[in-house]
Length: 272
Image 1 (cartoon, rainbow, N blue to C red):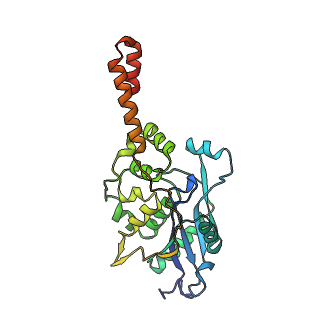
Image 2 (image 1 turned 135 degrees about the vertical axis):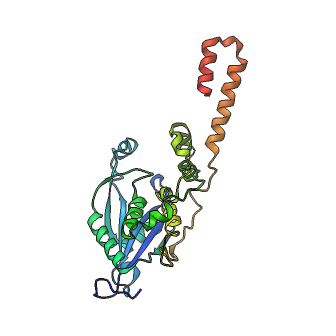
């Protein structure tokens, strides 16, 4: 990558940082950011991280705003060295994937990062977050190559599958998802849509080919989680629980002849 950017000096290196799940609830989906190393001859830790998953997590109103679809997030530029200390302290996997961009694309991407880094946006788990911001930016600087490779590539995977996997060790969150999330969560999604999640973004960008060059390079592993995974539980425990409850309600309604029509109807409604 000795190409010149703007004709002055060596081109900066740009990486996709993918951070694995941690212990905290908000970290279970993982995290994605872009890393820019303006001087490739300098130590990697001197690079800058553009992180679009920033919010005031100490704000007591954030949870209410999140549930109501009003939570505001924004970007932040910090040294990679500082971010790495935090990620390693939280024992989260950290991988940097080189982005094989052309010099002009790299320059446009860095310009986008500088313009957008502090702009606020309304967070949406599946449509507007730290990963989708990067997906959309990369699609823009590659003239639509990301969407062309992934926008119609349907999978057998739905958002609910993702949520079940993510909350597999959080029974209450699994139950909330099963009871309150609508049927739109069960539609198969494209690779483009599943790129809302950092691991999905990696899968999507790995499909992008620019003249025989894959957009996503081989990752550099900066940290491997030492503790057991936080997302390797049973994703179907809430479904099993609801199935048992439904069977009991139906049995009560069927066998409870002395209950009268009102209570039996209530039991059947609860079963439905």
